[in-house]
Every structure is written in C-alpha cells, then in structure tokens.
Image 1 (tube, rainbow, N blue to C red):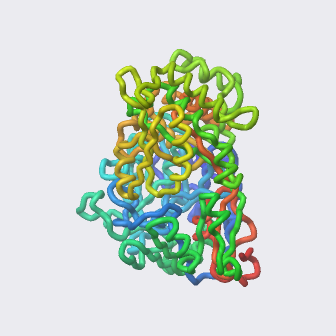
Image 2: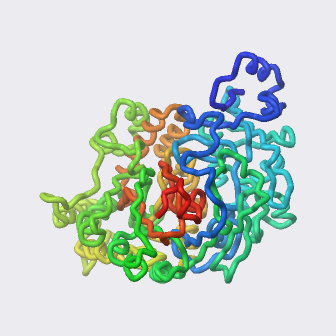
Image 3: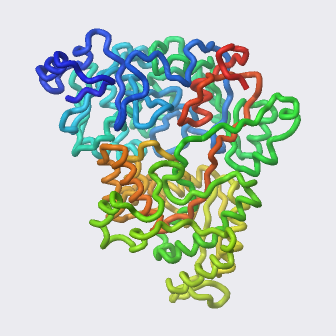
Length: 620
C-alpha cells in the first residue's frame, strides 16, 4: 500500500508495513497509538504540514456563541424533508455542512487535497485498485454511538442504491465494492485504476443505520443521526430551520475543525421570491445575502439600513473557477438536433448590450465549460491536446482542430445585425425557411422554443433575446413555474431550454460523467440535462479521470472543453470575478486571512463569529 501522508515512509516503517498482510491491519498501528494527521493530495504536496493546528482562514481563539441567520442562495417556498440524499422532495438547507460529515475534508486554500476528519488515516494500494480508510476512534454520532467501518459501508451502499439520488451511483461507478476489515478499517475496491477515486471517497457522507431503521431510505425524511458539529434543533412551518451547536461534538480538537463553527445557533429562513427576501434582509430578518443579479446590486441595495450603516455592501475577491452558466438546449427535442440551429441561437444573444444596459458592466463572458480556470481551452489545439483528439478525428467536427470559436460579439465593427445575418444563413442551410409568418422546416413545423424558469430573474433577459430571435422567425416563449414543478420537469428532462449553472472545480473529474457522459443521459435527475450521447466526449472524460499530473488534467479538460464548445450545445452566459455580499454590520468578525476558494455563505457559517470587537479578527 502506498501511504498518503505528508512525508515518505521511513525504511523501517515501510518494512513493517510490507510485512503485514495486505489490507488486514489498522493503519494507525504502523504509526503508533496517536496517528499522524493524514492528507491526500492528487498532484502536489499538501500545503499544511503534519503538525498544523488549524487552517489559516480559521481563528482557533475565536469566541463561541451568538447566532447567524441566513437564507439559501436560491429562493424556494419550503422544504419537506431532512434527508438531502434522495431525489424526491426538497431538503432543508444547511444539512450537508452542519449535520453530516465525510471521511476527510478539503482545504479552501488549495485544490485537490483533503485532510483527516472521520478518517484519521488513508492508504492507497500500489496497483491503484483499492483505498483504505482508518476511522478515528473518537468519532461519534450524535446519539453517542461510535462511527465504525460498518457504518461507512452502510452509507456507501445506501447512497449508490436506487433509493438515493442518482449522482452518487454515477460518481462512484468505478467502485466495485466495499469491505469491512476491522471495526475501524474499511476498504473500497475499484473496477479499474482511477486516481481521483480516493478523494471522491474521502468526500463520502456517513450516517448511522439507526437513522433509517427498517424503512426504505427514500422514505426517511426526519432528523438525521450523523456526526457533524450541529443538530437540528427545530423547524417552523417547513420554512425556517434552526441548528444548535453540539457541545458534545467529538471533533472539536481536530486541526480541520479548530476555529470553525463558532455560532451557538445557525438559522436558515426560506422566502417565496427574491423581492420578499431582499425586503426581509433590509428589515433585519437575517444577516447575510449574496446577490447574483448586477441590476439588483446597483439599484436595490439601498435604504435606511444602508444609510445608517446597519447594513453594508461588500465585494469580496472571487478566485473560484467559474464553471459553466448558460442557456442549455435539450437535445432530446427535434428542433435542437442540428448543430447549425444551435449555433444560430448563440448568434442571436447580444451579451455586450446586456452587460452595458442591464448588468452595469459587472460581468465577463463565459466562453466554454471551465471558465476562469486553467482547464479552459484557447486558440488552436497544441500537440498535447492533439494527441488526445487525433484518435477521435472521425467522430469530431473539423472545427475542433482549428482555432477555437469565440462566442459571438457585437463589439464594433461587429453588430447584432451582422450576427443575425449569419444565423439566418445557418438556419437556411439546416432546412429552416420563412413561410406563413414563421420559420418552418420541410414538414411545415414552426421553430418554437419554450424557455423554462422558476425564479423570474431571467424574464428581462429573455425578453431581449426573444426580440432578436423573432427577427429570425423563431418564437421564444417564457414559461415561469414554481420551484417544485421546475425541479420535477428538470429531473424528467421535460423542457426545451433553460438556464443551468454548474460550479467550477479545482479538480474536474468523475462528476463530468454525470454532467456530459452518455450513460447519464437517460438517468432521471442526472446533471446531463442536455441529453448528450457522444462516444468522443465519453472518451475525453476518461482521459480527464485517468490524468495523474496537473498538466495531463489540464490537457484533457481543454480537449473536452474544445469539443463541447464546437458542438454549440449551449449559449454560455456570464460570470463575476467578485462575490457581492451584503451583511448586517457590527454583528460579526472573521479571520484576517481569507480563503482562496470558498463560497461566502459557507465561509460565514464555518469561520465567522459573533463578536466584532474581538481583536484578532477582521470585522465588518
């Protein structure tokens, strides 16, 4: 077994390790009674040394107490379950962060690295076909039971079953099985080498079988029995939920927990729509609000609270990979089968006008599927990309091997009129011609697209886009539905076009199978909302997952990005390089060092505290 600690094994310890039967020993025994704090890094050395005491973005001397009141990033009428792992229903916010724990946890300072949490040691087989985790003997569920290897195996088998949401089965598709070797040692066996799988398994949520009891897992909706630092204290009308900090939490001594989760209570409130939510924030009903709409940020974050200084606007640096956000086409619909139609639809979006007139110049254009990251393709493919693309040439568009197309622009000398003329030519080539007051194909069917939305925020953008499409003879209908119906229709792929956002990753990998892979195209609830079924894309995702160096990962992602862009499967939208956050002033403080990769809500919950006079923090 190749041990995944910070420093190489000494010869004596390696001899001892190799002398033991493979997979039949508690890893901590090699290191003594008090095992070293483990880390696993895919490509580089971990940032933090073995004796680190806390993450730099947490203050271990932060005071404990007070409460923070939040609201989820997206609006929703209510929640109906406390189980975030099943497809049916809507789970309460905050459960994954506050109640459930994983085997290991990531650092917000570095990519591709995890540190010990429920597991206090990790080992990877030399042949790369299995990974073992040794569980911390102190780990306890909220009911006092120890967290055992059997609990880990139970959690894994439950999450990859049909009773759980399908993304788990997709993410862990390369896991052939799980073995309980000792009460504290669990081994996962792989169907093939997948160097990313140890990190994916390190992120496995663990819960007690007593939570399920004799019920089917998809019927479990009540308060979890898990190991996290908070418990569900109370709910109110399925719109508010309060979490209470656990004094008996087992992990307060861990370096990965010191200085974190400092609030005695964390409360989430749900609101029916974004307008009601903003007015509630101004009235003091909750403490932090992240704004995603530039127009709102420029025009609506004002009033007595901001004038008096009780509320404050912050623009925090955003170094996170932007990922993807855009209008996506459902390729299961006949009108989107021809790539020329999809490209024509992209030509009709005038991002420059939108950014200037509606977004206050706050956004940058997304060009592909790995925006604001080293995995984004540019220009013509280099020799390293061509080595992956050439074997697939017969399955790929010739455009893949040339200069990467840029998203249409109306910057002078460009114009929307010129782009629409190009779009009309493409549509005619695809067999769509103006006849009887609409753009029609040879069968006489009009080109009509329904845009599905659940919040209303896109209405003004769609109205502008629809006007441009109307000049081409295309009818774009705006369909606003409630959150529950929207989720149901997305889970069953019952839509023409909608907006989808996938957060960026510092280490893309197995999630791409669920997002773009053929095997996920017909799995209800999967992220492959496009319905993509392309063997070439599947092959490139295999290269991404098989990458063993950062350079190889970047090359494979760029090749995949290039193929996706040239397929015109979406109309990429925009991203911001800052977090727009409004907070209640004089209530909170945080460490002087900000994390590199984070989300404001998660950072606030985990690392802020409620005493702004505390001398070592940066107070608002």
